[in-house]
Amino acid sequence: MTTKAAAPTLAPDTRTRILDLAEALLLERGFNAFSYQHLAKELGVKPAAIHYHFPSKDDLGTALVTRQLRRLRKWRDLPRVADLPPVEQLEALFAVYDNHLGHDRRVCLFGSLAADFRTLPPLMQAELRTFNRELTEWLAQVLAVGRATASLRFVGSPAAKAAQVLTTLAGALQVARVHDETPFQVIVGQLRLELLA
Image (cartoon, rainbow, N blue to C red; front, top):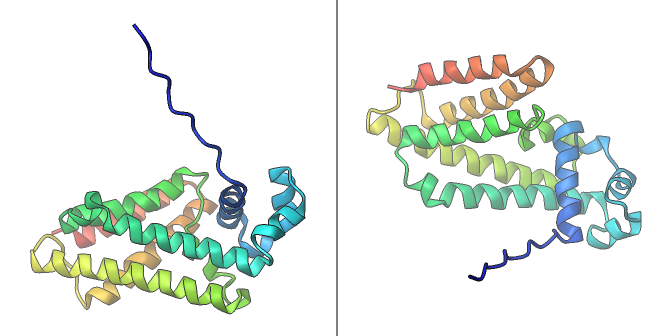
């Protein structure tokens, strides 16, 4: 009997490793609290290797937000999300934020960058606005369908409620960072009480 060898796993390329580490530092410390020196030391490379892939920190920051925007688009279009009824789509969104909580109580990308927004390069600001707009529009659509099918309830416009839910989730992650995960769970529980029909 022959055994089939497992397919080799490829190590992430240098560019991906840089993005992964920069994202972790961004969510842990904020965009302005790490440098190429931090990245180079952690990755065991020279700063020139970072500059090769991202000539400036502005380029790196924009690449981080662009990558997150691609992830958002991929996630919302996955059949396991897109084909769900509105209540389950809302729960899928809550699970994304809960996942941040499970990673050393990290904040979300928007929550991390909003504090530094005025110091971010213009292209990075534009990408962050696009990310926030697309996430808000997606959630507003979920809420609108949920209200139309009587599975979700809320007062006001779907767009306003979507903005409120997203800022509440971002804020809940901030509170969890200061305390523990209990306030986050209480806040998400309150959102469920207010939204689920």
